[in-house]
Length: 257
Image 1 (cartoon, rainbow, N blue to C red):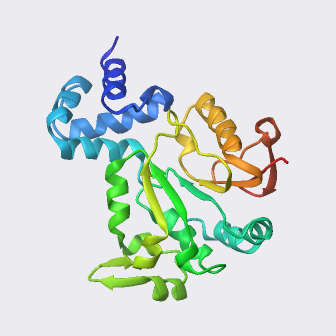
Image 2 (tube, rainbow, N blue to C red; image 1 turned 120 degrees about the vertical axis):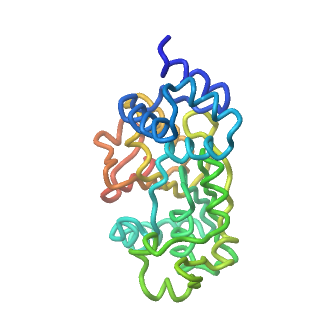
């Protein structure tokens, strides 16, 4: 067993995360640059240091889970969600069950909550947001973001839901109250069911084909008939029917009824 393979085994024991399900060349390169920057010479040395250094462990999780996020990322897709997808879902059910999977530092589920608030009072909005990285979830709960995270936020939304504090923006407490954060491993943990909408964007590209196919099936089973899966702009599903989906719009897939 080589240095990286042993590292995979150690990480799975420590965290339950299976690095073998991620594309090896990409992940290895990303983690090697991190441990070299921190002065380690091997994955073994790096792992031993992580055992005692919580900050280093969080840095590893950050690097591994690719926390690149912003509000209203690919804004045109969120417009489609608001104008075409949600009205149809609300016709079927006034209290939608919504899941933001692999939510990173919270920009996506908070965007969802703000959009849903156009259809109902924020006090009635409920979004489940999950991620593997507890550090990212902790930051999401704080709800303070740099300006670059708000580049695509419409001005009226920024005025309504954000307060400027120095060079950062703090999100409204009511929006925070509409989102429940939990730790969840997409590749290993069971999924709840009867969702009307699942949003999982810009994470599947990091998984192997086998892991991706398994997730499409699991997402399908987690949705109600007619429920929608919303994926990222590089994650088009080319054979949706084989997973029980029909294309509703670009990057939106409806569970076949």
